[in-house]
Image 1 (tube, rainbow, N blue to C red):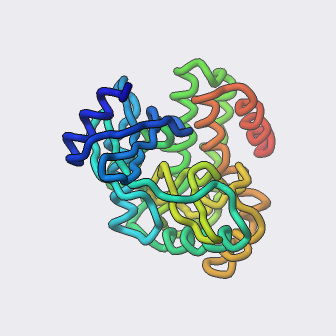
Image 2: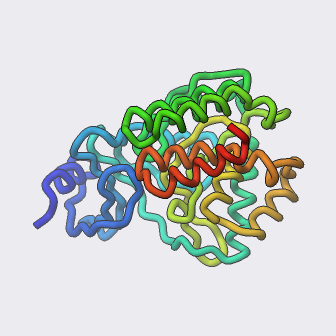
Length: 286
Protein backbone atom coordinates (compact mmCIF):
# COMPACT_ATOMS: atom_id res chain seq x y z
CA UNK A 1 0.00 0.00 0.00
CA UNK A 2 1.37 3.40 -0.98
CA UNK A 3 2.18 5.93 1.71
CA UNK A 4 -0.69 8.44 1.89
CA UNK A 5 1.49 11.48 2.61
CA UNK A 6 3.72 10.68 -0.35
CA UNK A 7 0.86 9.91 -2.71
CA UNK A 8 -1.12 13.02 -1.85
CA UNK A 9 1.96 15.24 -1.85
CA UNK A 10 3.14 14.05 -5.25
CA UNK A 11 -0.26 14.47 -6.88
CA UNK A 12 -0.87 17.90 -5.36
CA UNK A 13 2.57 19.30 -6.17
CA UNK A 14 3.55 17.58 -9.40
CA UNK A 15 0.20 16.61 -10.90
CA UNK A 16 1.29 13.00 -11.31
CA UNK A 17 0.08 9.79 -9.69
CA UNK A 18 2.51 7.89 -7.46
CA UNK A 19 3.04 4.38 -8.84
CA UNK A 20 5.63 2.95 -6.45
CA UNK A 21 7.93 3.94 -3.60
CA UNK A 22 10.91 2.18 -2.10
CA UNK A 23 13.13 3.37 0.77
CA UNK A 24 16.64 4.61 0.12
CA UNK A 25 19.52 4.99 2.55
CA UNK A 26 19.68 8.53 3.88
CA UNK A 27 21.51 10.70 6.33
CA UNK A 28 20.02 12.44 9.34
CA UNK A 29 17.20 14.25 7.56
CA UNK A 30 13.87 12.40 7.52
CA UNK A 31 12.88 9.35 5.52
CA UNK A 32 14.28 9.04 1.99
CA UNK A 33 12.37 7.33 -0.83
CA UNK A 34 12.78 6.67 -4.52
CA UNK A 35 9.45 7.22 -6.22
CA UNK A 36 8.15 6.21 -9.62
CA UNK A 37 5.51 8.51 -11.08
CA UNK A 38 2.72 7.75 -13.53
CA UNK A 39 4.67 9.41 -16.35
CA UNK A 40 7.55 6.97 -15.71
CA UNK A 41 9.95 9.47 -14.18
CA UNK A 42 11.90 8.70 -10.98
CA UNK A 43 11.87 11.21 -8.12
CA UNK A 44 13.57 11.30 -4.73
CA UNK A 45 11.41 12.24 -1.75
CA UNK A 46 12.33 13.18 1.80
CA UNK A 47 9.55 13.00 4.37
CA UNK A 48 9.47 14.61 7.80
CA UNK A 49 6.60 13.31 9.92
CA UNK A 50 7.75 14.88 13.18
CA UNK A 51 8.68 18.41 12.14
CA UNK A 52 12.31 18.15 13.24
CA UNK A 53 14.16 17.79 9.95
CA UNK A 54 13.86 21.38 8.64
CA UNK A 55 13.28 20.24 5.06
CA UNK A 56 12.66 23.83 3.98
CA UNK A 57 16.28 24.64 4.86
CA UNK A 58 17.59 21.77 2.78
CA UNK A 59 15.49 22.96 -0.16
CA UNK A 60 16.89 26.47 0.31
CA UNK A 61 20.48 25.21 0.30
CA UNK A 62 20.00 23.13 -2.84
CA UNK A 63 18.37 26.05 -4.65
CA UNK A 64 21.10 28.42 -3.48
CA UNK A 65 23.82 26.15 -4.87
CA UNK A 66 22.02 25.81 -8.22
CA UNK A 67 21.51 29.57 -8.48
CA UNK A 68 24.90 30.80 -7.18
CA UNK A 69 27.31 28.11 -8.33
CA UNK A 70 27.88 25.39 -10.90
CA UNK A 71 28.12 22.62 -8.33
CA UNK A 72 25.86 19.78 -9.56
CA UNK A 73 23.02 19.22 -7.08
CA UNK A 74 19.53 17.76 -7.55
CA UNK A 75 16.83 20.15 -8.72
CA UNK A 76 14.14 20.82 -6.12
CA UNK A 77 10.73 19.98 -7.60
CA UNK A 78 8.66 20.78 -4.51
CA UNK A 79 9.29 21.67 -0.90
CA UNK A 80 7.16 22.06 2.19
CA UNK A 81 7.58 21.56 5.92
CA UNK A 82 6.87 17.83 5.62
CA UNK A 83 7.87 16.90 2.06
CA UNK A 84 10.84 17.57 -0.23
CA UNK A 85 10.74 16.26 -3.81
CA UNK A 86 13.91 16.29 -5.94
CA UNK A 87 15.07 15.00 -9.27
CA UNK A 88 16.66 11.56 -9.19
CA UNK A 89 20.33 11.65 -10.24
CA UNK A 90 22.13 8.57 -11.53
CA UNK A 91 25.42 7.66 -9.90
CA UNK A 92 27.15 5.75 -7.15
CA UNK A 93 29.36 6.65 -4.20
CA UNK A 94 32.51 5.03 -5.59
CA UNK A 95 35.11 7.25 -7.19
CA UNK A 96 37.78 6.62 -9.79
CA UNK A 97 40.86 8.88 -9.84
CA UNK A 98 39.21 10.81 -12.68
CA UNK A 99 36.08 11.35 -10.59
CA UNK A 100 38.17 12.54 -7.64
CA UNK A 101 39.94 15.06 -9.86
CA UNK A 102 36.58 16.24 -11.18
CA UNK A 103 35.34 16.65 -7.59
CA UNK A 104 38.40 18.79 -6.84
CA UNK A 105 37.67 21.01 -9.84
CA UNK A 106 34.03 21.45 -8.81
CA UNK A 107 34.80 22.25 -5.18
CA UNK A 108 37.67 24.56 -6.06
CA UNK A 109 35.28 26.57 -8.23
CA UNK A 110 32.65 26.57 -5.48
CA UNK A 111 35.18 27.90 -2.99
CA UNK A 112 35.72 30.85 -5.28
CA UNK A 113 32.16 32.05 -4.64
CA UNK A 114 33.02 34.77 -2.16
CA UNK A 115 31.27 36.92 0.42
CA UNK A 116 32.07 39.99 2.47
CA UNK A 117 32.32 38.04 5.74
CA UNK A 118 32.17 34.55 7.18
CA UNK A 119 28.73 33.04 7.74
CA UNK A 120 25.68 33.19 5.50
CA UNK A 121 22.54 35.18 4.82
CA UNK A 122 20.52 32.73 6.95
CA UNK A 123 21.06 29.77 9.24
CA UNK A 124 21.47 26.42 7.52
CA UNK A 125 21.76 22.77 8.60
CA UNK A 126 24.31 20.07 9.25
CA UNK A 127 22.31 16.84 9.18
CA UNK A 128 19.10 17.88 10.94
CA UNK A 129 20.95 20.18 13.37
CA UNK A 130 20.53 23.93 12.86
CA UNK A 131 23.79 25.63 11.90
CA UNK A 132 24.02 29.31 12.98
CA UNK A 133 25.63 31.63 10.43
CA UNK A 134 25.70 35.26 11.62
CA UNK A 135 27.92 37.38 9.38
CA UNK A 136 31.27 37.72 11.16
CA UNK A 137 34.41 39.49 9.95
CA UNK A 138 36.84 37.39 12.01
CA UNK A 139 37.21 33.75 10.99
CA UNK A 140 38.62 32.76 14.38
CA UNK A 141 35.64 34.40 16.09
CA UNK A 142 33.13 32.76 13.74
CA UNK A 143 34.64 29.27 13.97
CA UNK A 144 35.13 29.52 17.71
CA UNK A 145 31.74 30.94 18.66
CA UNK A 146 29.38 29.55 16.03
CA UNK A 147 30.96 26.18 15.38
CA UNK A 148 33.04 24.85 18.31
CA UNK A 149 31.30 26.53 21.27
CA UNK A 150 27.86 26.13 19.72
CA UNK A 151 28.33 22.38 19.14
CA UNK A 152 29.89 21.87 22.55
CA UNK A 153 26.86 23.51 24.12
CA UNK A 154 24.21 21.53 22.25
CA UNK A 155 26.12 18.25 22.69
CA UNK A 156 26.47 18.93 26.41
CA UNK A 157 22.76 19.80 26.73
CA UNK A 158 21.92 16.56 24.93
CA UNK A 159 23.96 14.62 27.48
CA UNK A 160 26.54 13.52 24.91
CA UNK A 161 29.50 15.73 25.86
CA UNK A 162 30.78 15.69 29.48
CA UNK A 163 31.31 19.02 31.22
CA UNK A 164 35.10 18.69 31.36
CA UNK A 165 35.29 18.07 27.61
CA UNK A 166 33.08 21.10 27.03
CA UNK A 167 35.47 23.23 29.07
CA UNK A 168 38.38 21.92 26.99
CA UNK A 169 36.59 23.03 23.81
CA UNK A 170 36.12 26.46 25.39
CA UNK A 171 39.84 26.71 26.11
CA UNK A 172 40.70 25.78 22.53
CA UNK A 173 38.18 28.28 21.14
CA UNK A 174 39.95 30.99 23.10
CA UNK A 175 43.27 30.14 21.44
CA UNK A 176 42.16 29.74 17.81
CA UNK A 177 44.14 32.68 16.46
CA UNK A 178 47.35 30.88 17.49
CA UNK A 179 46.55 28.03 15.13
CA UNK A 180 44.47 29.56 12.34
CA UNK A 181 47.02 32.12 11.20
CA UNK A 182 45.88 34.22 8.24
CA UNK A 183 42.81 32.39 6.88
CA UNK A 184 41.64 32.41 3.31
CA UNK A 185 38.88 34.88 2.35
CA UNK A 186 35.31 33.64 2.82
CA UNK A 187 34.36 31.02 0.24
CA UNK A 188 31.13 29.09 -0.22
CA UNK A 189 31.45 25.47 0.94
CA UNK A 190 29.21 22.44 0.56
CA UNK A 191 29.94 21.61 4.19
CA UNK A 192 29.21 17.87 4.35
CA UNK A 193 31.35 16.16 1.71
CA UNK A 194 31.54 12.53 2.72
CA UNK A 195 31.24 9.69 0.24
CA UNK A 196 27.51 9.00 0.72
CA UNK A 197 26.76 12.62 -0.20
CA UNK A 198 28.50 12.45 -3.59
CA UNK A 199 27.47 10.54 -6.72
CA UNK A 200 29.70 9.71 -9.69
CA UNK A 201 29.26 8.01 -13.05
CA UNK A 202 31.79 7.36 -15.80
CA UNK A 203 34.62 9.24 -14.11
CA UNK A 204 32.51 12.36 -13.53
CA UNK A 205 30.70 13.67 -10.48
CA UNK A 206 26.96 13.76 -11.14
CA UNK A 207 25.70 15.27 -7.87
CA UNK A 208 26.57 16.52 -4.41
CA UNK A 209 23.79 15.77 -1.92
CA UNK A 210 22.70 16.97 1.55
CA UNK A 211 24.58 20.28 1.68
CA UNK A 212 25.44 22.20 4.86
CA UNK A 213 26.42 25.47 3.21
CA UNK A 214 27.96 28.65 4.56
CA UNK A 215 30.90 30.92 3.72
CA UNK A 216 34.04 29.70 5.48
CA UNK A 217 37.77 29.35 5.16
CA UNK A 218 37.64 26.71 2.37
CA UNK A 219 40.18 24.60 4.25
CA UNK A 220 37.23 23.49 6.41
CA UNK A 221 35.95 21.57 3.38
CA UNK A 222 39.32 19.96 2.72
CA UNK A 223 39.59 18.91 6.36
CA UNK A 224 36.17 17.27 6.25
CA UNK A 225 37.08 15.41 3.05
CA UNK A 226 40.17 13.99 4.74
CA UNK A 227 38.39 13.13 8.01
CA UNK A 228 36.16 10.52 6.38
CA UNK A 229 38.50 9.65 3.48
CA UNK A 230 35.87 10.89 1.04
CA UNK A 231 38.57 11.36 -1.60
CA UNK A 232 42.27 10.59 -1.71
CA UNK A 233 45.48 11.76 -3.32
CA UNK A 234 44.07 12.51 -6.82
CA UNK A 235 41.61 14.95 -5.25
CA UNK A 236 44.15 16.83 -3.15
CA UNK A 237 46.72 16.98 -5.95
CA UNK A 238 44.20 18.47 -8.39
CA UNK A 239 42.80 20.91 -5.82
CA UNK A 240 46.32 22.11 -5.00
CA UNK A 241 46.99 22.71 -8.69
CA UNK A 242 43.93 24.96 -8.93
CA UNK A 243 43.80 26.87 -5.63
CA UNK A 244 46.87 25.79 -3.71
CA UNK A 245 46.90 24.44 -0.16
CA UNK A 246 48.66 26.64 2.38
CA UNK A 247 51.54 25.35 4.44
CA UNK A 248 50.42 24.04 7.82
CA UNK A 249 47.05 22.72 6.71
CA UNK A 250 47.89 19.02 6.91
CA UNK A 251 50.12 19.49 9.94
CA UNK A 252 47.84 21.68 12.11
CA UNK A 253 44.65 23.19 10.73
CA UNK A 254 43.16 19.97 9.33
CA UNK A 255 42.85 18.53 12.85
CA UNK A 256 41.65 21.83 14.26
CA UNK A 257 38.84 22.18 11.73
CA UNK A 258 37.83 18.54 12.05
CA UNK A 259 36.91 19.04 15.70
CA UNK A 260 33.67 20.61 14.44
CA UNK A 261 32.36 17.60 12.46
CA UNK A 262 33.53 15.30 15.25
CA UNK A 263 31.44 17.29 17.73
CA UNK A 264 28.50 17.04 15.33
CA UNK A 265 28.92 13.27 15.37
CA UNK A 266 29.26 13.28 19.15
CA UNK A 267 25.89 15.05 19.28
CA UNK A 268 24.19 12.58 16.94
CA UNK A 269 25.95 9.33 17.78
CA UNK A 270 28.24 9.65 20.83
CA UNK A 271 30.42 6.56 21.24
CA UNK A 272 33.77 6.47 19.51
CA UNK A 273 33.39 10.00 18.16
CA UNK A 274 33.87 11.36 21.69
CA UNK A 275 37.18 9.50 21.96
CA UNK A 276 38.27 10.94 18.59
CA UNK A 277 37.34 14.46 19.70
CA UNK A 278 39.33 13.99 22.91
CA UNK A 279 42.38 12.95 20.91
CA UNK A 280 42.19 16.20 18.94
CA UNK A 281 41.83 18.21 22.13
CA UNK A 282 44.92 16.43 23.46
CA UNK A 283 46.69 17.31 20.23
CA UNK A 284 46.20 21.04 20.94
CA UNK A 285 47.16 20.83 24.60
CA UNK A 286 43.86 21.89 26.17
